[in-house]
Image 1 (cartoon, rainbow, N blue to C red):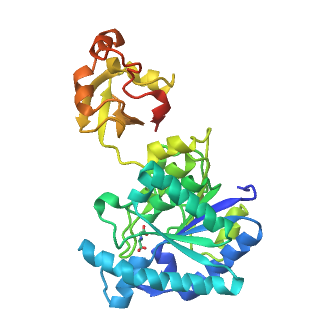
Image 2: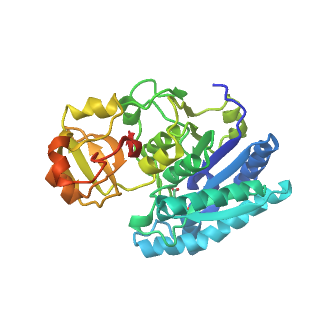
Image 3: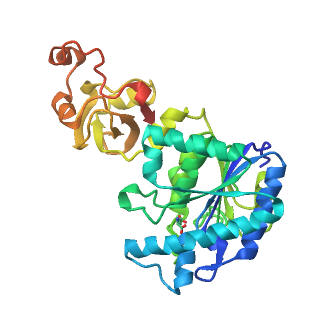
Length: 366
Ligand code: GLU
């Protein structure tokens, strides 16, 4: 598929592409990729790299054959590998006169609205200075609750944050393979259906983290930002130019529909929901087709604990996640008012103007 000339591109490189064997840097590959990035820059595109490899390189430096189970050991590996990774990227960019800018992020850095906007502003500055931001998760300080989990998700969040037109997820996976059908790579995905999701499996690689499942859920985040997503093999020669030129091997996920605005993207995809609000069957079309707010009358139950202003999942009668939104009441109140009409609510909250449990401005259908 022929793509339009890109303005802003995020390129995610998996550990398996940047290393050979366990934790040995593939400096030749990084030099080639740096040259490809320079080539893309020369077309006027702005490029952000999301580079994995820190943990794998640390393992290699320490002579470990298996990823350590203890979080503190993985964190230590990342600290050792990250500097090796950055040195190699900078050496790759040197012949092209480009400067790499290391950016290490935790999920926490993109969750709160102020920090989210702060990271965006910094990335914009780095781009304006003509550097290539090289982003990785800050694995050394990441614990479960502040982790992105994998760099596929991180790269999709970055693509959404900076409003990229294309996200290239380059790893050892050559694309989405239709295992049950043709056995070949699916070239174009117009819509991520349950059948498409069923084609994805987890990873079995010793240094890898993601796998096709995490790549597809990452693709969903980027697509809602209007960003086209390629999943392709990072070891293919000239892969970046070929993909963007529309001749590359791999799978292209087409963004469809209007992109969500930046605040709604932040609300839907950068938060960890604190709980859930279950709705009845009548509320489903009201939310889904009519784009209305969630009212107490449609609510049948609440899970978890959340405060007013926190993000919750909105679940259909069968427990499927329909939407995500910012609750205007805390979980205790929602439990109390579930099923009540607006008329019944008014005397409970005299003087309160807004009685929607989740206002439509703060609600995103998933
Ligand atoms: N942040 C990890 C690393 O640099 C990799 C995570 C991933 O590839 O998804 O080793």
